[in-house]
Each structure stands twice: as structure tokens, then as C-alpha cells.
Image (cartoon, rainbow, N blue to C red):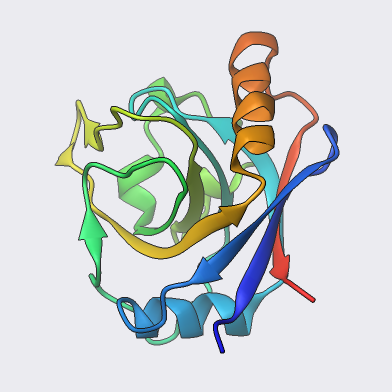
Length: 166
């Protein structure tokens, strides 16, 4: 029986349900599942296109490494990125000084992709592969509309949360 998570944009009151891809990304699924719930400020991607994500303190011990990686996520992909502190602290990325991006231990990025034509490339670092560990199975159209609203109206005050589904 597949395990599921619920992903919520708290301020907008929109949630979706995602199935863990335990056969494809067992280490990532285990690390995320064991660390739930996770929640943080929501961001809309600057470079990747149709992505909403949050940054939380690293929780995988040991680190999961690459599994089921992609640089071209599709709508409904839920992706894990483990960043070292030096990778995301550039002021050009726009993170507040007190955010997880500026932590000495780096940050974990939990992301959802809601539209097509995404490309995970960063002008400073090049390709940025992430681990696809879940796929959205319910609520993608509603989440996509809320994510587009984030892009058009801003992310200030919005929280992205990940929890075990009931």
C-alpha cells in the first residue's frame, strides 16, 4: 500500500495529495517520511519556472545522495534537494538574511512542480538535479492555480507545509 503526503499552501487554504515513489527513491522517501511534518516560508522559483518550494533545515542523516534524479521535472513531481550552505547563500537569490538559505548547515529544499517546461539550471552552478520522491495524485489543478497566484501576487506571508496524509 502506497504512503501519501499532503502538501498545503496554508494562507491560500489549498492542499494536494502525493503518493511516495518508494520503489524509485527509497532513501529519499524514508528520510522525508521520518522528518514529517515540515513547514516553511513558500517561495516561487526564479529560474526553474513552474515550481513552489520551501527551505527547511537539513534532516537526512546520513545524506540520501542522488536517486531518481531529474533536471526536467514534470507537472505533479515532488522533488527533494539537499543544498550545502555555499550553494544557496548568494544575495542575488533574494533570501532574507535570517532564512534557512543562510544557515551554516545548508538547507533542504522541498518542491512541487505544477506546470510544464521546467529546467533545473542555475546561472552560478549549472545543472541542479533533484530527487523526484513523490507524485501529486489529487488536487494538482487547484494547487497549480494557487501557485500561479503566488507568482502573480507574491509569496509574502505564505507557508508551504508537508505532512503525512491520513
